[in-house]
Amino acid sequence: MNKKRLSIFASGSGSNAEKFFEHFKSHPEIEIVSIFTNNKSAGVIQRAERFGIPHHIYNRTYWETGEVIIDILKHEQVDFIVLAGFMLLIPGQLVSAFPNRIFNIHPALLPKYGGQGMYGMNVHKAVKAAGETESGLTIHFVNEAYDEGQILFQEKCQLDSTDSAEDIAAKVLKLEHKNYPKVVEQEVLKSI
Ligand code: GRF
Image (tube, rainbow, N blue to C red; front, side):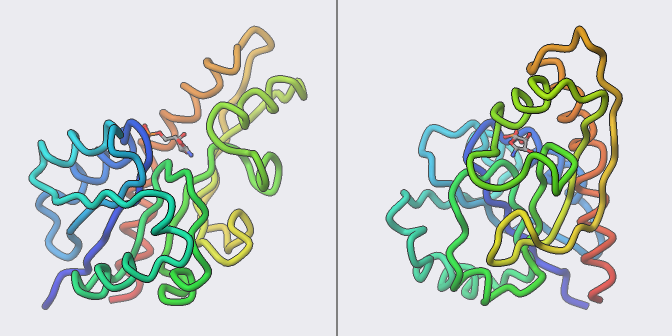
């Protein structure tokens, strides 16, 4: 049987992407075939190189329609896409080409702290400013409305009133690393 083929999109450090490289390194049914980034100095590139995973760098212009990217994904016979800290909007054409086949992770408990401008540290600063006693992560499918696709998994963490936005980010990132590859694995296996 052919393995299911995943591509990871990331713009930054790529610590989540690395968890995927480790998790699926010798998986019998799923493999990571490539990464895409819009940022030529993203840490994820070096991490991918260490695991021998090919990378593609395409600047913002290419993500406006996504045509070139869709062609490459088709050529690589990619079945699922994993967004792991990818900072640009996924073009509608790409979403339509992969219906319920694009995963995203959001570092908060959606529908709270999602939508426009809610990415990276902005999320954790907003959680801190609101005096929340808990935050967490959400793993969901991507649809045209971005943070509004079907929710697949959430997990909470407790916050202390003394936690800074950076402390909150660290607590949530730990949950991301623990859960993201496993949740994607379960969903992909369902499709087999
Ligand atoms: C994660 O918190 C992810 O949820 C977010 O950006 C961060 C990416 O971190 N949207 P990394 O690049 O995986 O280290």
